[in-house]
Length: 338
Image 1 (cartoon, rainbow, N blue to C red):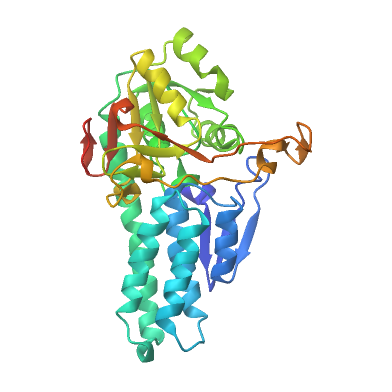
Image 2: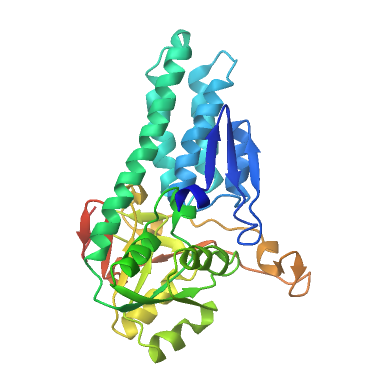
């Protein structure tokens, strides 16, 4: 599975990034030779998903160091780190990985930035990716415990291999849940405006033979009411200390629907998505993206060109609406205190 859908490949001194904007119809890789190339791929949504953009940022930091030829190494690394952190500000995983790499680098004296230390840096980046994979494996095992036999679930956006660089978080639970007969059917929100559900989650589920059906985002209430959805499972881009969770726009709506219909609403994410420096969701910066990403679908205008459009990429679900938050460290229930 991962070899087929891996969101990026590091080869030689370059990163080849799978262009997720072209999926599921084309498999195209974009070559990144510099850290700025990586940042552009993240900004342009060539690669997305909080864990995946966190991991690739680590490799991007490696490229930044490998090509460095200046005199002020400390200032340079601090600047590069900030460029990564600000390129998609809602996703905490970028900050987590980049700050870890930055702290690792700042312990190395400038005059000792030799091949040996570059190898140590690359090992650290690889170590972070392996930690990510192991944490996802534990997350899946923990998430499975919450599922009843033959559950019908609904999910939003994409939280699989493409979003996590490895086996997936929420979608990892869903796919493994199907294999263990805990899940019988999955409804997938198309997830406007980037259609991650339609293009990516349906692709991953069908690739794994999981029975599924795509719905438009505004069908969720009908489906929950009429189709006996047993639970909703989503991922997270940033979780505050109190459990408030930022995730793809539309997640909050699903949480409200789940509360009204008295069905469990589960958030599945690695601890690298938890920002313990932020007390509540009110402090989470919500990325505002281009109006054109909403006004156009496949380069075709769907409204008047002069129309005003609001485009927050994420919303925040209050902790009290979340039945449980699943991480590699266990299953946590409200009230949360990370």
